Length: 380
Image 1 (cartoon, one colour):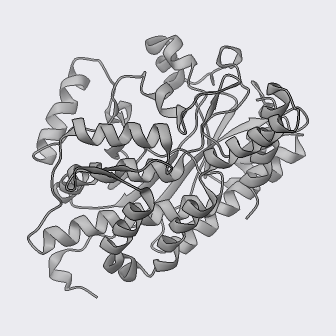
Image 2 (image 1 turned 90 degrees about the vertical axis):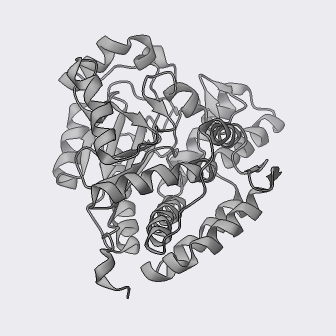
């Protein structure tokens, strides 16, 4: 264990996921699930479930954990509980960041003050948000350390996105992207890669400008790929699609947690991660969004595109001391399995192509993708 004089953060972990609610008999997204479904979920999950912007969505969140295996077990239990409740109402959840067939114009937002305000401000941009994601919180109590780690982690956000991609289809078409979700989400303001800040005070002053002018009500309206949480003493990673396989979600959460500790460890040893422009990191963000894990990302030091398997090998080597510290080496290694079987986006495309090759029309092939997602979302 490290010397306590260095004020090691807790690095607690919590995971939030958003699901889409579908009719398993047709594969269609259910625009207005019965209120009894949400009431039963609330009664069953005791504070770990909330409504989302659209009525066709639901969000779950684990408690705060020191042990990532325990967080993963709770996440799996939450998924299973939502699926069981949904099944009792003739519904099913899917853990995918877009619905292959859904028409965004046919969806209804949840009538809550916060969501009413988002709709009034953003109009059709908000109406298009038929998308779901995964958010991972890591506890870093010291605010200045939190901002310092926040600034450095931006480099690795495209790597995490690439591993998570689950949104290749949009409005009944193959989008050609592995994460079309980001194309939708980026149409909102205050999204994308976050700014860098010299201190927590500079961050507060910057956000305060928008709050004091009435542009936003608080920092929860910052929808960056990574942000200091307004509610908790955490960094919240938001760039990832939701993983259809719960094991993939836990592996990515393990990578993020270990990366956060690596940045702390470097600072403790009077070092830091090298800095690159957002112009360059955004290029990797686009490559991850477009290709997922299939075409590699740019290694800025080598100044060449490197296969993702090599990048993951390097990343795992970098965080090995931190995975050892947390006792989560097995979860970090699970990220290699994503490369072997592909991301959810890869598997969805494979199902679609197989159906088309077998003579199915476009809608039937997409309905088969939904059936695949229903099964895989709770196939632990």
